[in-house]
Length: 151
Length: 416
Image 1 (cartoon, each protein chain N blue to C red):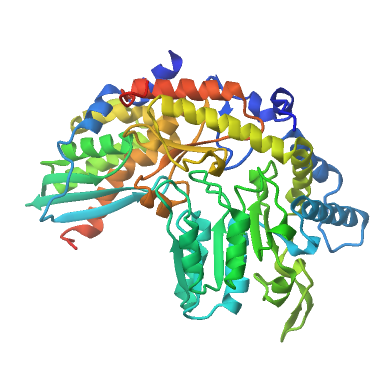
Image 2: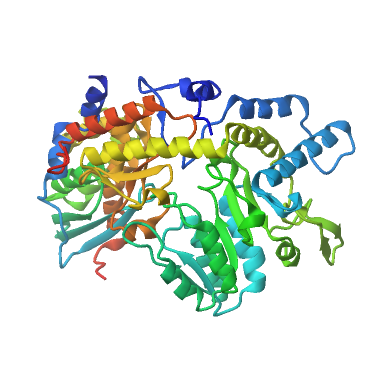
């Protein structure tokens, strides 16, 4: 049915899988990076914690409540960023932002972000783009200000 | 009281013919804003095409027409809400501004450090934040009557907190988030008996139930035109005349002064003292036909109609095992139905409903303290109005079932 087809286009199977996965949910203690983000549209909050060694993200976890899109996006981000160097993390974030905000083709995504192509359908729902970018913006904010922050 | 002829009413609302994502629009977000009948839209066009000129200034024909049309709506509104004098009704941008006006123009003058403002946990942010701003600026204390688990207020707790002698008692008549209808007249009476100044946020009351300001006996009442078929950009503050006279102006500028010298100014009479600058007279004028429409349709019939639809929606939701928030007692419920489907996030619900053409509000409804109290980050909310009908309920049910199927939410055992 039409409505279902559109739902399936937005909430692709892989998204639902990541949403339900608890592989990288949680908080790291101690953490070298700790950042807190809020989506003012819905009040959803996310907390990103990461352990960074020799300029590389060793472990990354996200905590908080959110919709399918924000949680799945954060889960995929955590997976893609673990093991990456800080410069690569910034490149990945920029590439994801181009996909969501500038309609960049999903085919051009870096290989680590392959699963993120499943968020392409979100672009048809401008208010939901903020859900997809919440975790990423929080991570970038953490890199700018929160490295070593542990309160 | 005759039932509403929704087929005839719907024909007055051009937007209801729209399709959304390929489906007929089922507009169930009336607590956020209502749609506008042709009569309101054409009043706006008619004014701009035939009468537009600034009010209270020129002596030319157009300015006189505009002034008399705008003031005519103030008088019409006074009759609609039982205000003893039209000049005690002040037009603002929205109800948020109305409450800020009370906080700034009354609160700054009459509250001092240590004074208590009493509110409730079920308020919209617009009836919390203005008082918090005042608390940080002049050291007043803001206290809140707790909300019970079913989303109502316990009158014993209200009385206990009122006995501590708050200077202001400010509460909502109806909860926008979960639809609780408060016993307004009794809450006002309790406040007055305790010696408090009383403000009522009537945003969710005025579109659905009659207001009789003279009988209510409050000191301030605020509401908003756009939630009652009127245009955006028009809020209302009614105030007791003696209080309004004692208060200082809210904003300074044109229209609110009697005489200005470089040293000092004297204030204009009510209501202009509180309406600085060129007012939003075009929208004020288009508010008139909205009031006519509500009066002709009849608030009692409107309220009965939307309550019946909301009760059916509730039954459908409960039948599917969905959690419905709000009072257990039907007499305490409005046309707002707030719900959560399993562990599904309200935003995902909102998008799934939208794909079926069903507009519902999702999120915290600008009531984060209430959501925290009810231990949910947010809800999905369907809110009904005079033009909603069975077809909207059918679309709502279809959207609900599709959403549950798609996200594999199983009805709770024993509910189906």
